[in-house]
Length: 192
Ligand code: IMP
Image 1 (tube, rainbow, N blue to C red):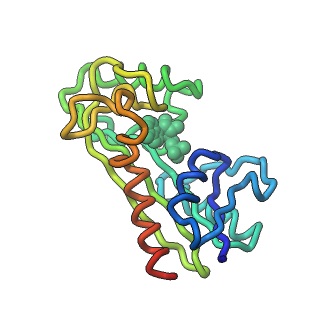
Image 2: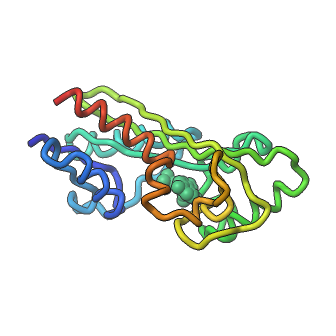
């Protein structure tokens, strides 16, 4: 079976993709490669950061590889927090990130937002990009305790609950990450 590396240390994300591609690809992650360092995300776009991570693995381990990068974008804030989503408030704490975003939106009428994921797949030396987007709005207060990141203030269009009030199964059916992953999986299935 061909091997494919997922440039992540997150076992949960790895299990999801292993299940989706079982029998077709052996999925390894950075832990399987005994890589415990950090790949710095120095680019200004999701595609740039995802490509930087997949290239790092391909260069260092000579294996086909994919990497993802995600974040939240607001038109009213010129695309912020964007690639800085995890570091928005500078503390590395999700509660602080959400509090800062709510504060920065106080004077704004447009609260529309979108989560975006870009996956870079380096396959046979070529970089293929897959994008997933989910549109929604930012609530004025947090609601729900599930999920992570900005989930408690993001309400996807067509729903009256936030991501943090959904079960993981519900969120995984519609999320930006799930959409991008599905596109990559469809591509890989065609290749086999
Ligand atoms: P990553 O590239 O998937 O690690 O995402 C970067 C950051 O974007 C996370 O640390 C979160 O702050 C935010 N983010 C990405 N996806 C989600 C999501 O599904 N829910 C909430 N926050 C997210």
